[in-house]
Structure formats: C-alpha cells, structure tokens
Amino acid sequence: MINIDLTGRRALVTGASSGLGRAIAVNLASCGAKVGVNYLKDQVAAQAVVTQIQQAGGQAIALQADVSQPEAVEALFAEVDRAFGGLDIMVNNAGMDGARENCAESQPDHWESVIRVDLLGPYYCTRQALKRMQPQQRGVILQVTSVHEFIPWAGYSAYTSAKAALSMFTKSVAQEVAMQGIRVLAIAPGAIQTPINASVWGNPDSLRDLDQKIAMNRLGEPDEIGRVAAFLVSDLASYITGTTLAVDGGMLIYPDFSHGG
Ligand code: NAD
Image (tube, rainbow, N blue to C red; front, side):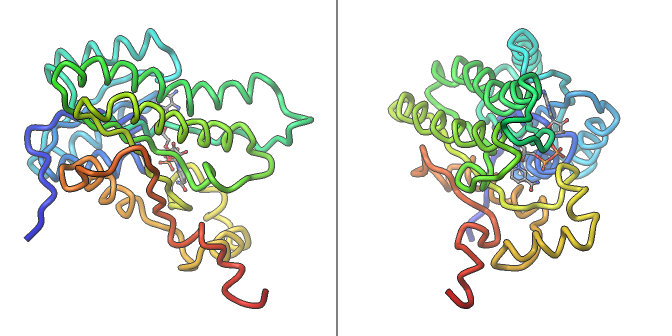
C-alpha cells in the first residue's frame, strides 16, 4: 500500500485560516507534518485550524504575518525557526484576486496590491525558505498558482499576470536548486468552492455559467486540492520539479469543444 508520509517534516502554509490553505494545512498535518498556519487577520479562524489539527492528533501553530511585507516575512520565519528549528515544506497559498477592473479604468494601487500579495509574497517566502533548505539540502516549495496562469481573465489582469509570473518564477528557481535536493513546483486550482469566489457560487446564474466552463460541470472541493498538495510535497513526488499540475476538473481542456465546433 502507498501512503503519503510526512512524519517529522516541518511545513509552513500561508493564508491557511480559510479555503485552500486550510485544506492544505489539515491534509499535510494528517500525513504527519508539523504545520505553521499563517494568517493575515483572522486569528480565531487560524486557531480553529490549529485546534482541528490537534484534535486529529497532529501538531500545528498559528502564525500571523502579512506576506506582502518583507519585514513581516522575516519575522514570520524567525518564529518558524523558534517553533520548529527549520523548515522542510513551504506552501505559498496566500492570495487575492482583487476588484474587477479593466486596465484602462484600473487604479494603480489596486493593481499593485494584487502583485504584492500574489507575486512578491511568494518571492519573499521562497527566498526565506531556501535559506533554511539549502544548508540541509532538502525541501519542497509549492506555489498555489491558478488556471489563470494559463487562461486570460478580463478585468483581472493583475491576478492573471501575478499567477503567470509566479509560474515562471517557480521554473527558474527550480532550475537554481534542482541539484541541491530542493523541489519547486506549482499547483493550479480550477474553480474550487472557497470564500474567494463566494459571490459566484452564491448566485445560481453565475454558478451555472461557471459550471459550464468546467468539463466535470462542478466546482471542486478544497480537500481535492489539499490531498494533491500533500502528495506533491511528499517523497512520492520525488521526481517532480519546475512544473505546474492543474487540478481543475478539466477547465483547461476547452469544455466548449465537447460539442459542435
Ligand atoms: P481564500 O480567500 O479563502 O484564501 C486566501 C487566503 O489568503 C485568506 O486566508 C487571506 O486572509 C490570505 N491572505 C490574503 N492576503 C494575505 C497577506 N497579505 N498575507 C497573508 N495572508 C493573506 O481563497 P482560496 O480560494 O482559499 O485562495 C487560496 C489560493 O488559491 C489563492 O492564492 C488563490 O489565488 C488560489 N486559487 C483559488 C482558486 C479557487 O477557485 N478558490 C482557484 C485558483 C487559485
């Protein structure tokens, strides 16, 4: 039998008080990892994730930090060092899609804030994670990108640009550290039911429209990302680096072409 075994691995998941981050943190812990549950503002929600993990027999701590601020990221890693004595798994999950604004009407500060969280945040965290992983010649960095690293999305050019750039960042850094026992890769979720898209699945018309963009004709569950993330950061995926795995129910296979054409 094949088991995902992360016993003794020290993990940090950003934006882990909700949605995909929460599911990833819980799945990693259920495979034996000690998990740092990073959150931005909602301490109560982060503590609930920690409690859920502990009640299932796992280990976790809640760690506040704004990943878009390099000083805050440095302080976050100092806390990780104190709590875990190092890091083996970094999951850059924190993200935002921002307001829908076409380019000509967009506000530069809105655009920049998406880039700061979705691209600079993973850069700051990857940089700090590598400083811990290189001396031990072991580690995995998993970026949570999106199908929008591939699919354009009108009104969300900051988001799509950040995710596409994060993908190329992932490949470049993977090249840098492939010979050092460190894997750097990405998971690209499709439409997964979380708070980020609540306004879409909360409305029957927009949900129907979204379902039609997915070959399986349904949204994904956070655990469907969490389970794959646990596999990707485990030694079972030891030969996978510098690539993105889409977990999207077939969003990238042009479902519109399943008829006509
Ligand atoms: P979510 O809104 O529940 O989670 C995003 C998390 O990031 C929140 O907990 C939020 O507090 C945190 N965050 C935001 N800014 C932060 C900052 N500056 N510092 C620290 N944390 C911060 O939504 P989600 O769907 O779970 O999104 C998680 C990731 O998955 C994001 O990167 C998102 O782009 C990506 N994603 C989601 C979907 C989807 O359909 N849900 C699809 C593709 C990609």
